[in-house]
Image (cartoon, rainbow, N blue to C red; front, side, top):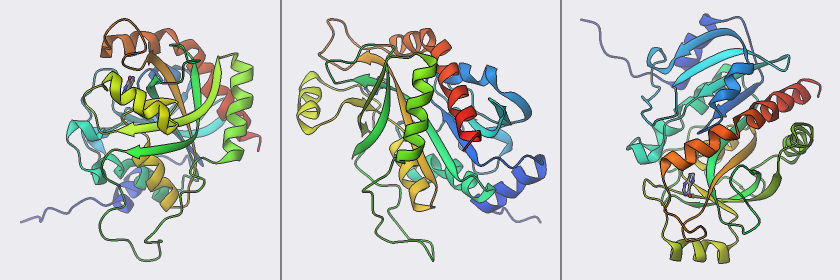
Length: 276
Ligand code: HPA
């Protein structure tokens, strides 16, 4: 009888290496609304998450769930279209499994994208924010538990988001002519949106935008020595800042409207990255 072998990041990375000769250094994780950027990728190989052992099934509307290898702006890239969220009930190990696979596959730099609620009063739906730092209010940490040999038990997070990659994003934003901000992303477990009182509190704590993803992947990527950059599409004003209630439809609609800019932004970033 064949014993069931638990997939590891390195075994799944081997599956990936066998599937393609492409060896990108840059990976992109496409969050809500960033999916249309895929249309700009010259696809070499597409693998549904279901075919990648250990990848959790993703369920949320607007998240396709496939890994795409190809070139973007002439630069080889691995693109994760759709991500597993903590609010879906996945463990932090599952939420960050794909990032561990990418690191084993040879990825050096990771661009994380998401949709977020704007807390900063200057932010409008359709704007973009590059993350300069984050506040982890998810109530847990993806590095909790045994620490792999050779990796730091207590990881320094003084600079999660790489300034050099951030500089490339700034240049890409200028070229794509998007409304652009820099700021602090506050991550919550979800799946509820926030109360207006919570948003007022988070504003006082220094948060500019709020969301339910990105931070676990960023922490794990830093642990594995990857450089990280991240960008939010501001899909709505956070709770209490706009006269109407929040909905996932609003998030998706705004993100969709911003998608032309999204594609340009990411393509230009990948192009500039390829020149470094
Ligand atoms: N809150 C939390 N997560 C989000 C929001 C929000 O307002 N918008 C998009 N993701």
